[in-house]
Image (tube, helix red, strand yellow):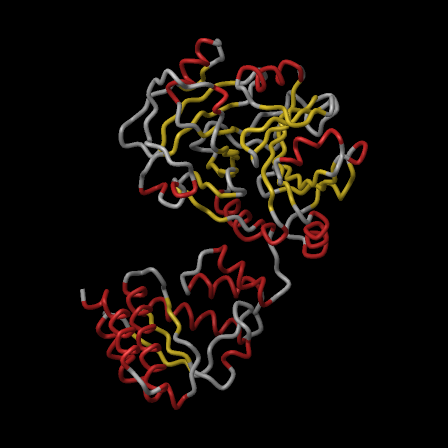
Length: 437
């Protein structure tokens, strides 16, 4: 209990101090208590004090050692803090830091420091230091963007997600999504129609005879439609004779429940509900309030729609895929299922990475889909990608027919096409653009 109250204790001491030097000392000691507790609890492998003069460190050194001992860890006095792209180099000039640590982490820090001093000092070294300090990838991204020209997609504004699906019979697909599932068609170019799952998560249905992909390419993707009405949807889709691939079998202690159907040309649709569960602690606050139940209700209508959508993608190299979406695209991981990871893209649009050994699909080189991000500053993102090459380009910037949109296409490590889009003012885009307002 004393450890948990230590930072509060030092705040109270601060309030009782009239001497500015004593106030500053109380603040620093309170920070040390908090950092030492985080290291002891393995929240952070290392924790750094603020940079201080040698004179100030001399005054605090004995108390710092006592704090470390109290928490069962150690403290190291570093006269020359490692300099990477993670922090501005001038903040430690002629200053020292105290490093609270366990032995193994300090050894890793010293190894990294030796590597940096030998001349290796790029993004990889900055990320390694960030991991030693317990920073998640998205926070490391933010620090790099402050100190270097490094950027990720969120820096250019993500407006929403879109997923392109390709059909031999486009009219049949449109009827299924619009009439059977009740999704609004928000634009129709003739050869392609976009339907709204949520205001910022869409599907675009494309005539495969003119699209980027062919209808016979492997449909290595699944779309999760998030709903609190699994029972109602299941009964309704059975009545409509929509093929069911995996039945609805709810379990009391599951992190999520659901069932899987098949659309008119073989794409998998997962009707899913995430539930309060340790696995979902970061996700649940982002979702509409729900009681994690799905029972029959007389008032349910398919027009209530869905509150989110997850695009599931399938990989052989999960670690490579995770690093790509976290470090190159810049998405924040919010669910870790072990063999599947979920990242937030927009308010209600998500991407899920799945180990193909456990998922509904196995890895394929070809995919009958393209994953799209709707980008506010498309030109800025394109210029960055062209200059920094975070991923290979599959198609450079182009304008769609009648200047309805601009786009360029990249490729991720699993050979999924990533299309980055911006819709322009045009009569065919009126409803679509209204959703951005």
